[in-house]
Image (cartoon, rainbow, N blue to C red; front, side):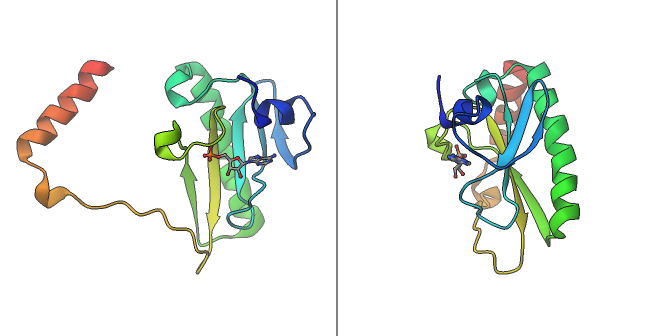
Length: 137
Ligand code: AMP
């Protein structure tokens, strides 16, 4: 699928590119959720993580790890959130697999909250859920 990221890779849309190799490109996210917000993207247009072969994901995450360290060194944030939205239901808006590196600063206004359901989750449900994942591997 042709997305804005394919156009960035083809140099048809400008971007602040910070890293590139044969498989991976990384550039500043246009919205700069925080200072240094970076996207790491496979050049091949896989739609999301579910669509991405393991060996390509390995290449992607190797660069994510390297860039997370570079962003840390460059901006000395309080922390760094590394996330990937997969499918519209998870908030994905560009359907070309990518990882967000979001440096975190005090009062940065970023809210990524999860609810704790431990008290409503039956012990048997943990077994069944873990088994469902193991079976799917
Ligand atoms: P997601 O919503 O997780 O799919 O992330 C897509 C990200 O791509 C958003 O955070 C957008 O701000 C970013 N984005 C969209 N267009 C551009 C662009 N031309 N240059 C850089 N980042 C972009």
